[in-house]
Image (cartoon, rainbow, N blue to C red; front, side, top):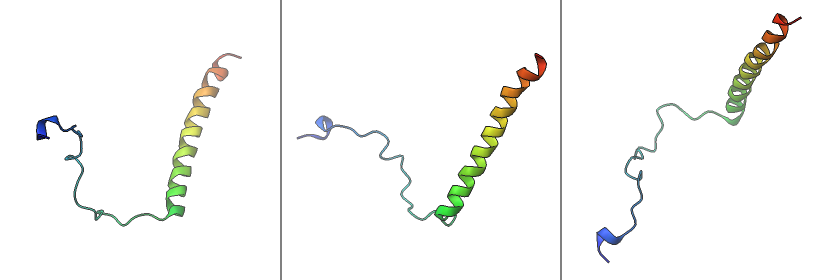
Length: 58
């Protein structure tokens, strides 16, 4: 079989080959704390958006 007839897999060459990350990996607990902080910020923003129209319409 020739190379031209083989199915191509785009994006394979775009993957970095260096397996060592620049920063040390975070622990699971730290990842969960980061996710919870982001979730709380999103929920606070959503709460403010939902209460804003209620304040304008008595």
